Length: 464
Image 1 (cartoon, helix red, strand yellow):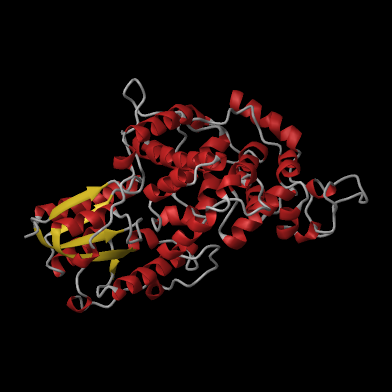
Image 2 (image 1 turned 90 degrees about the vertical axis):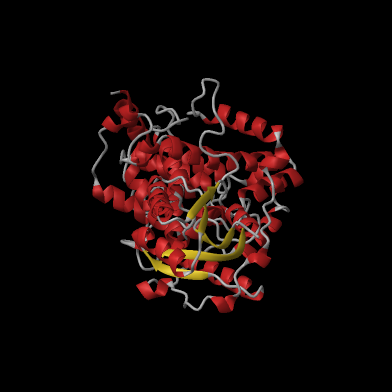
């Protein structure tokens, strides 16, 4: 006999069936397992009804339910607030154990502690596991025994620790799906996001585990050149897997195993990006003050600009700097922004417009399909020079030279800033002077600020 007659697996950021730690452990320890997803009204409060992430999650849930039905089981989707809804469904199902995978965001950790406390008080066993990352919390420490604050030594230790026991760290947790509850035993109707007024929106990648595996397989043909193509937004040189990592439709262990199977110079660089993701998860977990303030508290004293018209122009892609405007319009239209351009756009807001990085972080959070707190916060603080492993404040990206270097023919700009599509590949990066025109092309805004002047202001602001 298994220790538990019936267990619930609470799915959150792990919307898949393969290589799933909590599902694996529940199936190994239980006679029956019920996969449950909670439409969390605590999270949904205040979200726009066309939120891309909500649409993506619904697609993942629909696929999961269909795949489970093919195996004679089903997914149960409920609605409510975690502190009440999870204990209630565990009780309603007659389960005597709850399994879930760790989350590292401050609010999520408090949520999990509250739910676990309630269930344990009622005699229910609660077990949680590492699944969202290869190494979590304090598994990768510096020589002093403290968590790292700088990426490079962290990444070296990460790789060294992986090699010390690669098979154990990259184990494929294959759940025994025969343990899943027969569908006819669960009579409840699934809740849907549409019941709360949410509607479909454009997704630049398809949701679900099948789509994630297909993208990963396709990336195997491009990963060899990743290190050469990843910085050019007009080239499809990246994996586009970030939403799948965000919602766990792809296991991080599977991604690292993929790297070992497709070794190349490009693979080494892509693996480094996966380590950056884990680094920022660790920073958020070990230094939770970064959620609301600078990693280095002295930078909370910076006197940022409060120019709302500048901020709104940046949000809408009307800064007068073509590469920045193209990046912001791509974000607004698709929910995606190329990683190189995330740095360019973020640094422009903070170092040219001198606007608080938290304003930009919040805006990205509303628009990005792949938004997760740790990576978004880490990226913004890096660009603003307020974070760990920060870009030194005196280094300020020039948006014009970045455009000339990484979109040399202006292909990306022409796609998202059609007002400039008639310009040649030299003029398109800075259309405000010289060439055939003596003024800015019709329909395109004048630059909000002068980069050279603002760069000096930014450096002075940080020095002060």
